[in-house]
Length: 592
Image 1 (cartoon, one colour):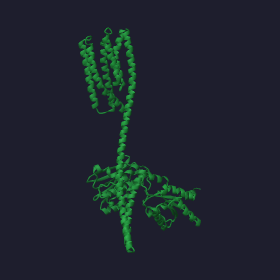
Image 2: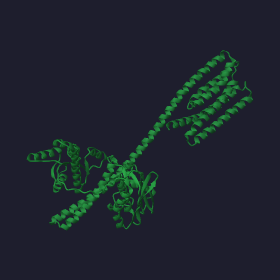
Image 3: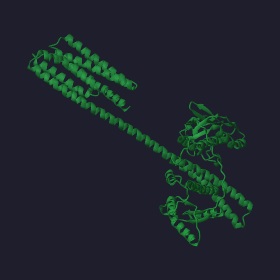
Image 4: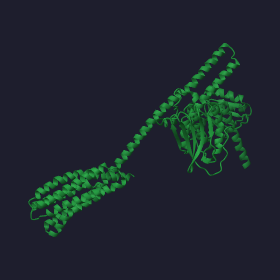
C-alpha cells in the first residue's frame, strides 16, 4: 500500500516537472531555429517548430488531465508510461535537430548543436529521474541521430564528441539512479511523517475526547454519589433529633431504617455500576465460554421481568427459540437483562419483546420496545456513562445511566456485535449477535444459592477504626471469633496474646486493600500467613474503582469484595472461602 502511494507521488512529481520542460522547449527551440535558419531550409524549421509546439501543447493538456483525475493505483503506471512516451517523442524531435545541425565544416554551428544537445541531456536528470524509463528513452532518442552522424562521418572532432556523449550518458544514468533513490526515500519519509502526524492528531483528539468524557463522568458521578450521602446525613440528623427527645419509637426506627436501607441500596447500585465498568476496563473479567440454550435463558428472563411488566401494565412477550449460542452465560444474561431493564424503564405504553433471528452462522438476539425512541444524532451517546436522554433531572428511580455503558463494554469483551435501531416516537431495537454453538448446553447457573450457617475464627486488618469496630461487631454477632487490628503487626500481637491463653485457630483473613504506611491487603495477608506458618483463605475488601488498582488487587487470586458491602455479602464471602478451602483439603486427603 505504501509503495503504491510512493509510486503515485513520483509520477505526480514527473508531471509537475513537465511544466518546466515545456518552457525550456519553447525558448530553446526558438533559439535553435534562429541559429540554424541560414543552414537549414525554412520549411523544415517551421515544420520542426510546429511539431515541438504541438507536442508541448499535448503535454500540457495531459498534465492538466492528470491533476484532475481521481487517484487510482492501477492507472498511475499508465500515466507514467504516457509521460515516458512524450519524453521519447520530444527526444526524437531534438535528435532530428542534432542530425541537421551536424556540420563539422561549420564549427560554430556544430558547437552550438552539440552544446544544445548536451544541455538537454543533462537537464533530463532532475526532470525525469522520478521515472527512469522516461529519462533513458529521452536520452537515447536525443543522442542517437547525432551519434550515428558522428560514427559515419569519422574524424577526430567526431570522435571527441562521441567520447563526450558516452561520458555524459554514463554520468547521467548514474545520477538518475542516485536521484531516483533520493526521491523515493524522501517521499517515503514524507508519507511516514504524514501518517505519523495524522496518528498523533487522532491520538490527540482521542485524548481530548477521553478528557471531556472523564470530566463529564466525574461530574455526574460526584452528583449521584452526593445525593444518597446527603440523604443519609439528613436521616442521621433526624435520628439524633429523635434521640434527644427520648427513646426512639419502634415505628420511627423501622421507618428510618427502611429509608436508610433504600438509600444505601441506591448508593450500592451506583458503586457497583462504577465497579463493573472499572473491572471491564481493567481487563480482570474473564469470559467463560460455553454453549447457552436460548430457550432456558429466555425463560429465566421472562420470569424475572414479568412482575415489572405487570406493575407497569405493559405487554411482555418472549418468542421461544431452540437455538444455542457460544457465549458466557452469566455475561450474556447480564447484557440482555440491562437491555430489558432499559426498555421497561422508558416504555410508558405498549410493550417489550424479546426474541432472536438467525443470521447465517450467528444469532441476533433482539430487544424491542415501544418507547419514545432515540434521535439518530444521539444514538451513540446512550452507550456513554451517566447519559440518560429522558432523565435530565437525574431521577434515581429511572436508573443511573450506567446500564448501556456496561452493555457496550461487555459485548465488546464477548466479541458480540451490538446494534441499535431506533425511530423517534416509534420505539427502539437493541440487539447483540452471538455465534451459533453445536455442543449440548450446560444448565444455566441459578442466580440464588443457599448458604449454610457457619462460625469461624477470622483475622481482620482494617486501618479505619470506625469500619473495623463495626465489622468486628457484625462478625461477632454472626458467631465468629475475631482478631482485629489496624495493621498486620497488631493482628499478630493480638493473636499471639490469644494463643498464650489457649487455643486460637484461624480459618480466614479479611484485609482492606489500602492500609497505612503504603501497605496493601496483599502484604498483610502474606505477613499473617507467614506468622501462622501456613496458607489461609483470605478476602480482600476494597473501595477502589481504578482499573489499575483492581488489577493489583485481583493479582493475588483472593476473593474480592467491593465497598459498600452488606452483611449478607460478607457472610456469603466467608462461607464461600471457608467451604471452598475445606473442599480442597478433603480432595487432597482423598488423593493421598
